[in-house]
View 1 (tube, rainbow, N blue to C red):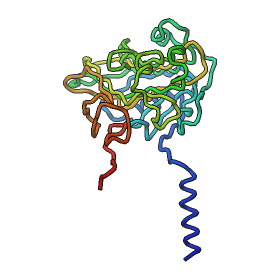
View 2: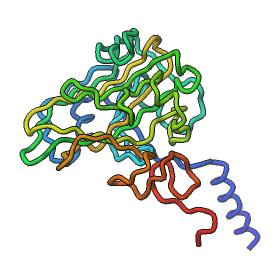
View 3: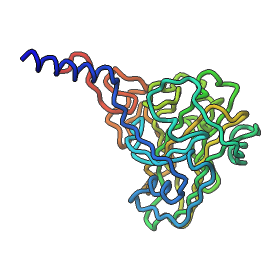
Length: 281
């Protein structure tokens, strides 16, 4: 009996010392079709052509995404695998000595950009659909030290218009209102020091061919990393012109709850899933 107690204690101790088991998995790839397929899945949207520009290590597919995101693809200004937890660095980043992109430079207010990772998808929206929807989240190592100075940017352009926006319609940039506000998530289950919540965009459009460009760049310098997770590109029916996010106080499809914040421990966690609280049976 004492022998088995010793073995059991050793197993339990090893489990505690090993720390939490992180689920997020990232497989780097620069193959445009693989990246697009991971975002679209079997959604009814038909992919016509794809093109990826950037380092093959800057992008990848992921499973068990953070913040309640479905499986999809990640695009970064450094290494895709840098996004993997735990958050044990304050200055994680890599440089590829690659150029930026005019779309990023415009988002950054004219500041020079570097190390662009860009996926362009030309797709067909089927007859009967009213538009598209997709989920995304942006994280960065620039937060909080370089907010107001370094302006890394990420965007999702649909037919030339950026749809990766906060609730006020502002682009998601490190110097933008979101990362300067009080809603930044610091425990997202990634390496990034700060992230947005899971955001969902819906874009009204007519059936036919359309173009989506997902892009992220370093701005001003090419050091610390910023990344964007994208998932669930699919058809939208009915009213398809809105922005929703976990933490907006409104329960949206795919959410168990939404209490208007992005904090854990209050019955509704930062992925908008119900959680046990003290006193629950």
